Length: 149
Image (tube, rainbow, N blue to C red; front, top):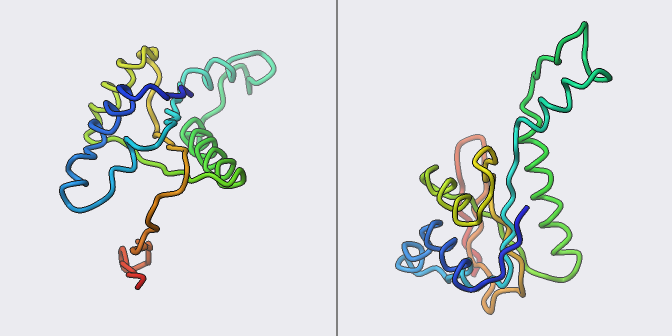
């Protein structure tokens, strides 16, 4: 994880997340306004390296991975960051970067190793001045939009 508090770097992250496009649609620029960004990365080879140690081998080989736990664990880390922020009375958000090349651009800008994949960015700060009035909920039939009045 890399914690970013520098305003210029936070603006770069917001640009990579296409925040200007969201602002044009009427949304608040919450990414660039958040005082702390926590960039969560993962390195798949850390898991392979560990599971090639003698105490983890099965029949002399690394286990077959039925699930890519490196992604799962990165997701759990992001959830813990979000929960910890809320527990401290702070606001928090989570976003990813699209297109995928923007993840590499962010990784390079932060000086992270080339074999680390950026999984997502967690923002931490004070709650927004105006609460959200729309909730997007996943349903079996797709995404449902709920407007709060």
